[in-house]
Image (cartoon, rainbow, N blue to C red):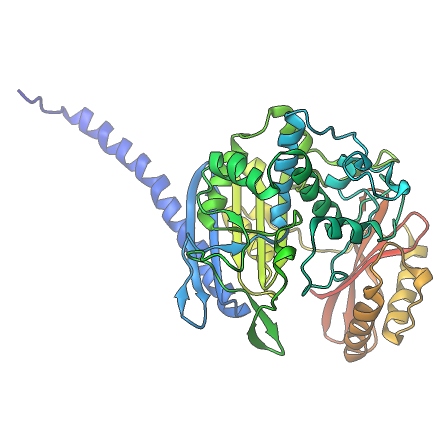
Length: 468
């Protein structure tokens, strides 16, 4: 016989129902706000296709495709659409390498010459750890390779051998794809299988990443997105590169939003690797000076709102990717895009601020300037940039093409803006041994951000100009 509920019991059940409904309603409201933001940004930026995933406290708040994976065939983006990884793939290369460490085949303190015995003698102080943390001093090969040539593994290695060392190992941090190309080759040499096979069998499969894989021009790959470039305001297909350039460890993978959400779950559980290995992967590197640089093994390890922020971005062949984990808020965001001029990191920041306004990038405001001599030097640098009067001695650790490309670009921008107002210091921070200064500067009615990085001996490592 069924028993009827007493009035008090009904009241309790009704109240519990309300309490359970509110979180669901809140999630729906949050999903709708994020969805509206993404749609507006996609339209504003003209991005053909996006896949966006948001995970809050272990629950998927949003997993959705926007726009088109292929414009020619009008194929919509879905959660199964495969995007190129770009440098987000570096965290997978680091994982593959750490599996070799755990298997006893590699030690982080090993000299890379143990695995590349034909490397220059000057490489002997460079360790596997230096490659993982971008502190090896090996020059970045980006923009130097012939992108139409197919390289063998040995030809890749020999090409990198010929690149100059920019600084002694461990002296400073300088992003270098060369190091991660070498790590992929290293895994090939010690694992008894290729780097991509290691990922497929020991990372993707156990993590539940069902469609993640290496890039191939020959294979018929379901749900593969097309990558696009913006040329003179017109969307064009990405440029073709040789197959060998899409087999390297610096970021040459396909993955879908579903794959990345599976990876997010594995990372959250600290699966696949031991706890000691994860601690190594997510610890900021210490330079020779003892200063800390916020980069681990294939991850940026930063802070936001006083809590850890682990992230990475990627860019390659008309694709841009961003993956961020705001640990204090248990919030993770993945944004995949198929346009080279898109900026998924900005979408990540906008979504994070919707979820929790305290995660918004702090607005810039004037702060006390205790180094007027630096401000005077950087005022002079700004004027020299406007005049096109850069000299190599003013810079350190920047690519040679920086003078060919960035110099004329900034000169054109500044001459179009006209005379600059006084520099107003808005932020000063230290990264490794370098200082980074951000100023607000008025050009007519417009306010711009002027950011410069300086070595201890006051040479420029970074210069950016951005409308505020």
